[in-house]
Image (cartoon, rainbow, N blue to C red; front, side, top):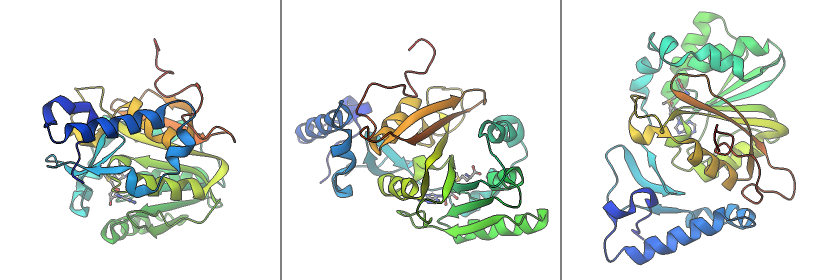
Length: 281
Ligand SMILES: C[S@@+](CC[C@H](N)C(=O)[O-])C[C@H]1O[C@@H](n2cnc3c(N)ncnc32)[C@H](O)[C@@H]1O
């Protein structure tokens, strides 16, 4: 069904025929986000939670999840951009790594690891007894990553060829999941998050690192950015709760979540959220 779902820009995109569908979808999303409805909605069949835009935007795939159009995946030919030297100054990657609170022996999953830019920076922090599971859906990216790991003599990394809807991680094995600049391009965010949550230990953390959509000065395409509120909405929808944020990076949000306490499947109670933790909220 080619319904209109981009709730954020409804006026520009609505047509008389699609308007009732838009209202229906919007009502569904609002109901899911209302207190008490989180559990029901998170358990819906995946087919019901996505919809399709009549015309995809230039950088998007036309598939919409919770009011957000999903972006295209960055191809492996973009590996050079991921490894650009200016990234140190633009993104301060080691500040991000230090904010994670890594400890020796941890199991970390770097989902959408790409060329391994963060995998290489995380691996030494957890020592030889820890492991980074570097997951990507492009074998070419994993090949580039492995070449670099060999060059730097890094051995505690397990490359994992994931699927678009499955990170291929073992249940209850991961202490910390990090997703840098990738979540917005998951073509199946709901299924991916279910796999990620399954792999997470009970006290594990999931960390979203996304370019700040709220900041027009961040020079990244709109669909490749995410607002803090949107991350919060999508995290709570799958039963996670906000823990803390690290707000000192020049361009990116760093948002930490954990599994919601039993009986609160996220979105169910008024708790601290990434949005409410903002100054002035
Ligand atoms: C923009 S790159 C970011 C790479 C790396 N995190 C970094 O910051 O340098 C996004 C990566 O996510 C991968 N990706 C996209 N969807 C994925 C999925 N469902 N599971 C795992 N990786 C995925 C892409 O193949 C690509 O390598």
